[in-house]
Image (cartoon, rainbow, N blue to C red; front, top):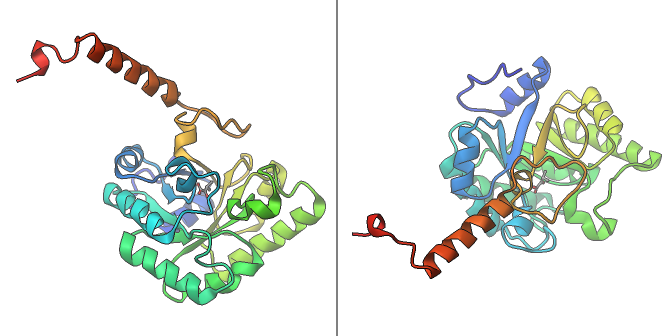
Length: 271
Ligand code: KIV
């Protein structure tokens, strides 16, 4: 079902309407102009300029090293490519935690310098003051609970979160706190499907899942993972739609062979 295909620009209100009408929200990450153009033209609802750029674009082990200026560079490239999708930008590690004034300033800088439509931040009750302060500037905020990669050194591993009752209870309380603070939507990452479904039922705002089952209001994947550009990351929740790693490697091997054998360029490929 796609009742909102005719929408020219996806807004936070459109996402809310999708939740109300039962239409699932589609979301992918994007970090550059060329890929964002293709993904937007295919009709994606939401593009997340995720701090996963730190991993997939820059090759860092975690999301912690990416800077505000680097996120703005990626976001402004995506903004130039997109006509329809709502564009959300991750507030990177160290630009909002523990300081709501800094959270506001970081968000204003992202919105002013990239032209994106909203920001996302990780955490529960501990970030509600920052969310409320960012909202005073009219900037929509998305929350993120469950496996929050900016806290990887607190967790120690990337395994499923909130399997135990105590952590599940805390996650439900945090989700309600984010909604109350004014988030227009939240992401739930790598938690049991039943818990995610319960959260989606209890909240009135859209809940987007990654590794959180099908009972939520929409799905997000990292673009590089779903098109198989990265063949080392194989979590259970990932569905690969292409195997671009091997496709591109094969194409490059053919090119090298053609250059070495003097097959390329041929008579029609020169002036
Ligand atoms: O940075 C990112 O890609 C994310 C998604 C995994 C939701 O936050």
